Image (cartoon, rainbow, N blue to C red; front, side):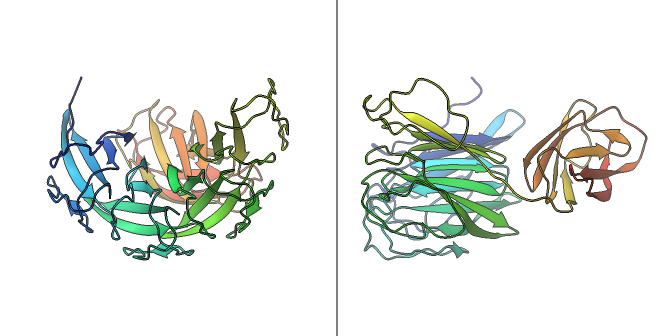
Length: 363
């Protein structure tokens, strides 16, 4: 054991630790039944002792230096309200954190890129999600996310997952009968399949978030709760539907799913993969810029990275090139080719390439 973490405002029934997430030396812990009425972020080691907004929820960020952990921030929603359950889900990728509040109740159907959020409460438990970004050691809200169609009891934000600049949000109480994927910013307003569930994909460009897709299974049915769980890695998303009812015992590779309902609540999971056309890649930055030797990983950031792309540092190819998404590649460094600051190059399968000179220096 390296550490035992507690909230600085620990209170009975807060459920600190109900959800946890980690990326590198940063840990995020949700306490979705924390009760303070605070509506600002506290960067530092303290937290509110107020208890006037029951189950509004909070999130705590901890950072490790060496082998010592310390609280870095105490996060609250700017529209914190009783029973929102902010912190019911958390996920983190590098310096970006996403927090779900599945019982938030606003009727907003647009994304707010910035630090504010709606104070409306006319769509009970419709749900929301909040994106926070760290600069240095300070956290600030980057976006407030809502579904394009808002219905009471959708529980949007019950599940959140992030990889690089892409995130997925589950809404297991969503009710549409749609059986296809909608690529774009819209979603169905149909409510004929109660608790069938849905998942929504969001993409960040620069500091702006936009909806990219609305996911439904090909065998949508009432009560399946599709979207109650999900995970993402690069361009691949898996979504769980624990109450799906088919009796199938084999995997279907492809776009269909069983319509059988003879094995009640047997459950299913669905895999989705982003497809996009090739374009000339660009390399904008590398982290770290020095210090990692052959066999270690660096992360290459940029645009238009395509599955199957290769990367090299100087004249040495990365021994493994993992395309996490169109904006991120993990490169396992090969043997040091030469001294000095070296150019990092990414080449897509269509032979288009982009590079950044003096981007990385071997130790």
